[in-house]
Image 1 (cartoon, rainbow, N blue to C red):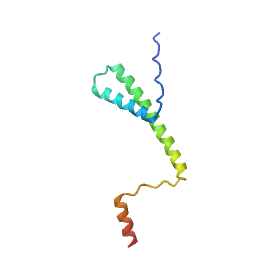
Image 2 (tube, rainbow, N blue to C red):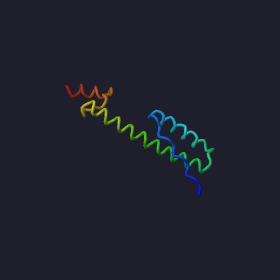
Image 3 (tube, rainbow, N blue to C red):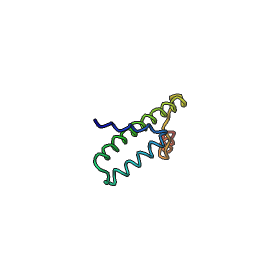
Image 4 (cartoon, rainbow, N blue to C red):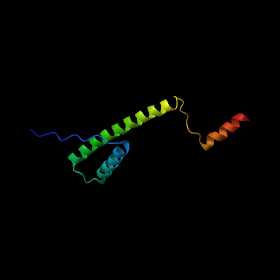
Length: 88
C-alpha cells in the first residue's frame, strides 16, 4: 500500500503563507508542472487561502475590539465635498 505524502506544515505567518501561495501560482501558471504535481499544488494553495482568510478574520475581530465596534470607513476626497454640500 503506498504511503500518503506527509502533510505540509502550517505557515509560520500570514506573510509566509502569501509568499508560498505566490510561488505556487507562478509555478502553476508556467504550465510546466505534471498533472499530479499541479493537483497537489492546487490543494496546498487552497489550504493557504483558507489559512490567510482565517488570519484576516481573526485580525479584523481584534481591530473591532480595539476600536470598540465603531469602525468607520475611510473618508475619500469625494466624501469631503458631499459633507460640505450638506452643510450649506
